[in-house]
Amino acid sequence: MKKRMILSLVLVGLLAFGVGMGTFAWFTSQATSENNVFETGTLVIDDPGALTANMTVDNIYPSWVSEEKTITVHNSGSLDFKYRMSVEALTDNILYDGDTPLQISVNGADFVDINQLAYVDLGEIAAGSDGTFTVQFKLPDEANNDYQDESATFTFVFDATQTGNTGWAQ
Image 1 (cartoon, rainbow, N blue to C red):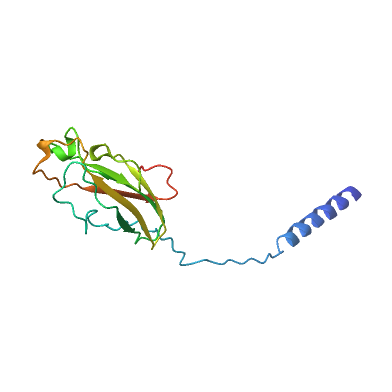
Image 2: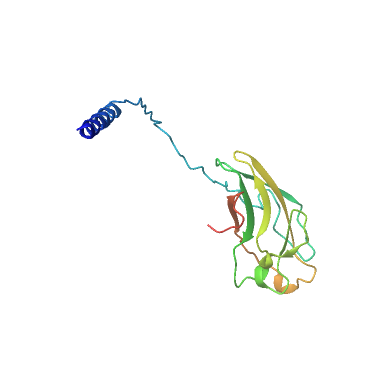
């Protein structure tokens, strides 16, 4: 009987302990952070216009060299960018693909045949800022009579990408 009484007291104690544990309350709180906006930036290279604007490029002749022209490029986007220039291929034009084509120098570098102008890295421009580079053109001394009365219209292409882009892939 004593054993039963002790067992009963232990069970009653465990039940009382279990009921008491169930009545503990914990304080909690919750907050929200609303209207979090993520907005992408813009990368916009403005058209620098004709590289030959305000430049005399008619009546050129063998050994002709243009004056050096400074070109301004504006970054009207919200991201800094690096930019480069190339020339679109032009076929069946002696000034582009003749034996002694027109030549170009960018930023004072050596003159290269215009059809060999690969991408020329022009540097970086901060958002909202301007950058400049220089160009100069020449018709080599070796151009012969085949070059008389010829003309060509060249298209220069400017590419821009974020400064953090290690390459140029889109």
